[in-house]
Length: 130
Image (cartoon, rainbow, N blue to C red):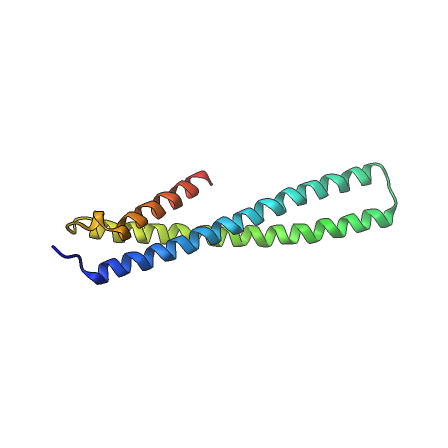
């Protein structure tokens, strides 16, 4: 029995959307972690400088660096949260679509279905680690 071409097309589109959200979320998460680490190091250095009563102009410069990095960190944190919500929603929506079409004869043997299975598993693993 032939599989509806629209169903296969929809699987491809939804897999592409999920893949795009996955990689965008992954990239934003990496930025977030990088800024988090940098902000922590700058804050520690600032506290050490203040405790050692170093030159006020150097402390002010370090405060500016920390404030700028912290601002980037907060922005990345918000972006990461938004992307995560979008990815979670896309994965749920796609899983529902797969569930509705699971009983279609021979669909699980198609390349589109196999690619979709891999993408859903990869997104689920990523989300479970967060």
